[in-house]
View 1 (cartoon, rainbow, N blue to C red):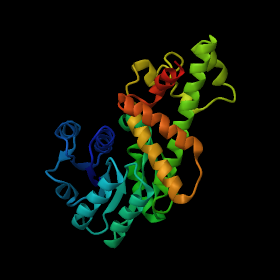
View 2 (cartoon, rainbow, N blue to C red):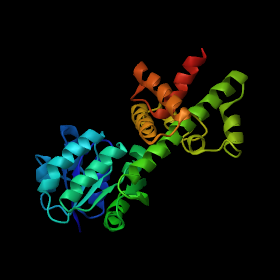
View 3 (cartoon, rainbow, N blue to C red):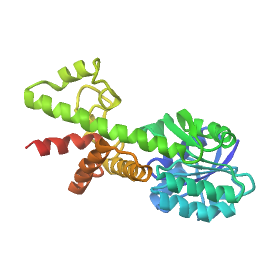
View 4 (cartoon, rainbow, N blue to C red):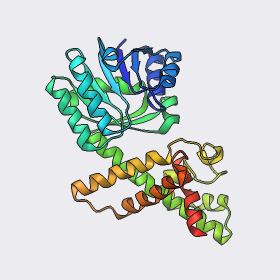
Length: 294
């Protein structure tokens, strides 16, 4: 099978690398955090002393890093160290400009590259059910698809360089806005004496139906698998939602788009994060709305 270097073995990258091992690939990994390396090693990943060591002799390199500056920095370091024709895949959620810079770094060394951010959270990473939104030329995407299929359930080619990040930013802006809308409805229902289950039963089969309601309900009870039934443990942390909403607003400003609901969602999640709840699942935003109602 393929030899893969995986840089970034955290809450998302670790399980993704483990799924590549389960698929039969040889995986060499690197992370700055010792505990992440220890878990990845237990999952069958060979841990390298540094990123440039991990990518030696790799057919494919996958990165999963916190922000655009990290991706550009790491790619600047490892791209000169990889072999001819090595496929570069970045699965981080970053700004479109940094994604395009990464593609340029790869192109300067004649390497195929794909930006492929994910949706599905830690549960999807562990279960291998992630959705990948990919940007890059057709040949690079075709080469990346079998690798992504070992980690995800749905792989979508969104267009050229940076298109995957553009799709992820737009999708998560919808998600952040819709979760606030669903949470507002439950807070109002509480004030009106309507039970959570009654509202769910109506809205989930009516025009209010959306993923934030039917798959990730922000109140305990109606959807047993929702983080609301597990003390709002992520899942997808509120701090990460705030990061994505900030990316959406940066992109909107750069593109000249008007996104007033996206901007307001950013401010609400920013308040939640500043109150010390960044590590709570993003559906916990309902607590912030209850607080505002007092």
